[in-house]
Structures are given as structure tokens and as C-alpha cells.
Length: 80
Image (cartoon, rainbow, N blue to C red; front, top):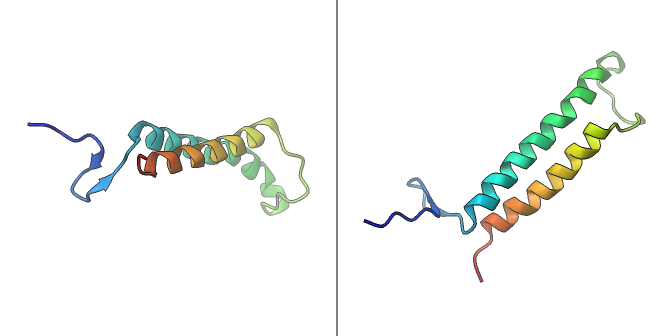
């Protein structure tokens, strides 16, 4: 019996590039988590981040979110 690794469960969703999808999902999650230290450090300013200088972790988090979004889109895009 052949198992189609591109189909997720019983929903019938077909991941044409599953590694790109799951890797991108992990990258977006990691990018969001990298924003948390700066957000928590702004608690004395009522969590207001506007005007604060960005640290390296925040910039790395933004890059991971963008790259992860592109990977997720590629993972969901149909094969041509």
C-alpha cells in the first residue's frame, strides 16, 4: 500500500513541498518568539515599542518571519 506523504490527515490538504511548509512554519514561530524579549522589556513603558531602537534579536526575528512566510507559501503552492 502506497502512502501519500503530501496529504495531511483526513482533511485532504495537499502539501506539495511539506518540508518547506513545516520549516517555514517553524521559522515564523521562532521569529515571533524572538520578538518577546524586547516586548517584555518594554513593560515599564506600557509595552509601547514605537520609537525604541531595534536590537539584533528583533531584526533576526523579522528576517525569520519573512523567510518563513515565503517558505510556507512555497510549500503550499502547487507544483507546476
